[in-house]
Length: 453
View 1 (cartoon, rainbow, N blue to C red):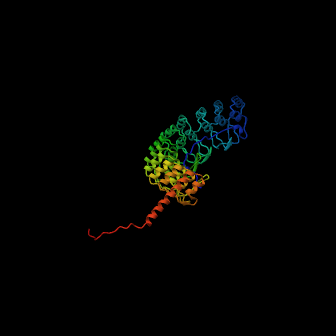
View 2: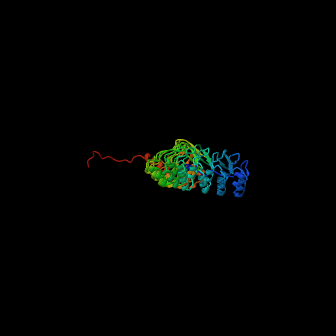
View 3: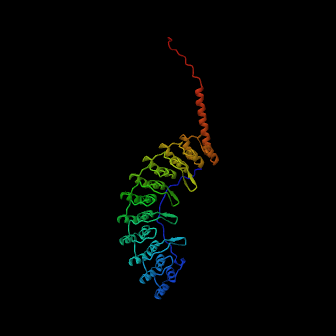
């Protein structure tokens, strides 16, 4: 049986990336352990005794990395003064407390991710390389772009960080996928860091850059409902018709292959963004690969104002999906329609508006021949069923699962059941009256033609 159609949408985030607990790693030495635990006196004693500041575990974790990740600035300074390598990167990916630290991660990246600003500046004072990246292509500027510190981001750029840097391969983080080709601008926009995004654009960030999954900064801003950022990106030349090139999950939602910014904004309920996108040339009739349209998404969610805007822009009120798709345990048949989505969601005002604009009340999917009335009867949406019946829904229609009456009876919705029975009885009475009228002989009308008065 068809279930919930509210399946759209979506956002790629640049989440937290590093957690370090050096004492849990293999081959931990006393200097690394002291640095990780913030034991300055022990660190000082060991360094004075001749222990190398650049000793490391088998994973390549150094005392400086451990102290930088924890934000122990006094220990970081002591290690740097002892000629610790400011760019010594992790040599092997490892996991601690279910958090992965990736091969190539540097002390600066660890400090940035954990918001240890003073440590970052100490590392910069020792000419730490801002262009280094881990094995996924994640660099300091990509981390900083997702943070709140716009000054830090600017300082990294001034020291040579590339504003159009990109991740080189996809990786999972906190249940989300960061796709190859993600840029600092995308990271900033995805995390609602508008100040960072503005700075990056001022420094030459490419607003048209697209990640490997087809997502760009405009898609992210639209999915977030960031009207001002959408407006700025469009003004700077972002393309409103870009579509995703992969299907993926973000924030527990499926983003369909072929989704665009308009679909994302419509699903999210962001009326202002929808208006901006349409004005900039977004196609109100565009669909994802499976045929999902912006109007379908807005109708499924009950976003009445967006439905009005899209209908005014001549979105197809009778659009249907072109293939079956599944979200978790939910299966949606080929031919799922705009009106079906609204009826299934119980959005009576949207149903009324769609019908007023030409939606077919008896539209059926292409697999089970289920119509909107059957869906309303199944879910118990009394007001929706009332509207559909009032506008001519076929109360006798039969699909692969039965009739709307069967559905109302089976799922225990007596009010809808009674409405259907009353309508059926009324139709039968009208048909009988019409038949009786046809069977009545015509009344005799004498003709006086040719007779004189």
